[in-house]
Structures are given as structure tokens and as C-alpha cells.
Length: 255
Image 1 (cartoon, rainbow, N blue to C red):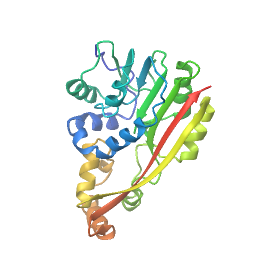
Image 2: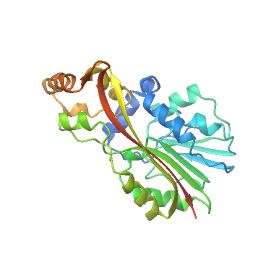
Image 3: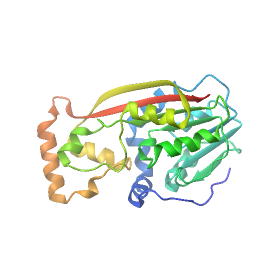
């Protein structure tokens, strides 16, 4: 196994920098992404796949599930070299594994039977063209599975702070249309709504920051302090404050 130099990193540099900066705290804070990985694993088709590509593998939360399939070829991709460093430090990969560091929308991957992505595709700039590109990599009966956040995710925080997310949060019907337009036949499309509790708004934002997905650099210190006070006041319960998360889980085949 070899780790190449980063190529074609073209996403917003602040997004890449944020994920890289917090790579070492990601696993400790990304409990929701771990749960998503476990549910996504249930969508893996029973078919034996010789080759697997994981897009946005990060520190390996979903990679662990893919390794249980013992593929002959495993290709792992992430835009952050720091995330990859964490993965190879904590997970033993087969010698045949190949790693591509860079923007998945710009890289050229080898042909593959199964493509997987856990909590990643909301970062795509051009989902339809990217999924069409993935479709073209696969043989007939190839499959794709992914989880992604929906537009109601963190709506309390985003509306209260009046900030824009760097990610693209679109509806489940939009993702189904994107898959269909790319050429896939959808085999499953599920939605889950969750309320996640934290001791305070400060802890919620700390969690977002330490998973690399926080947009709060847009706020000045005074505005951030007011946001924390207002959030604690508005969304407080006896169990702490809560935030809403909309999660989608999709699988499709190339027919």
C-alpha cells in the first residue's frame, strides 16, 4: 500500500483545512457519523464485490465495514491527507489497498464494482456529473451506497445564526432524481429524523468544530456569544439543548 501526494484538491480551502485540522479529534466527536456508518453497512448488497471504492473515507469509520467484505481491490479516497494519516495509523489495510488523496470530483478512479460514501456527498459541488462519472466506472450490476445529510439538518442553528452551510443540503427526492439522471436504478431510499442532545449550545458547536464541519468562523466573537445565549434559551430541555438532523440512506444499481 502506498500513499500518493495530494492531487486535484479544489474544494474550498477552508473546508479542507478544517477537516485536516481536526482529524485527530474526529473519531471521538463523530458519534452520529459512526451511527450512520453502521446503518449504511446494512445496505451493502449481498453480492460478492471484487473491487470497492470508498469516497471520503476520512479516518475509516465506514472503511472498517468494507474490510469485512475482503475485496480483492480496495480504493480509498479523501480530500484530507491528515484524515488519511489517521486512518492508516489505526486500521490495518491490505497490501493491495490504494489511496487517492484529493477532490473526488476531479480525480480519475479505476473501474470498480461497489462505490460507497458515508456522510460525504453533501460536499459535492456537482452531484449529478460526479455520480454520472461514477456510473461510467462501473460494470453492469455495479452498485452504489451512500448516506448524506438532508436540508433540515441543524436548521435551528442555521436559522438562528443566519449563516450559510458550506455543504449542499438537498431533499431525498432531489437525490433520487440525481441518481436516476446518472443512470442508476434506485433499490432503497430511506430517511431518518433525529434529535441529538448536548449539554449546551457551546458543546454543540464544539462538536461541529472538532468534526471539521463548523461554519462559525463567519461569526464575530460578540455574535457567537449572543448565538450561544439565544440557543440555550430557545432550545433548552431538562435533557439539555437539542439539534435536528435529517439523514438519508440510499442504494442503487447500474442496470
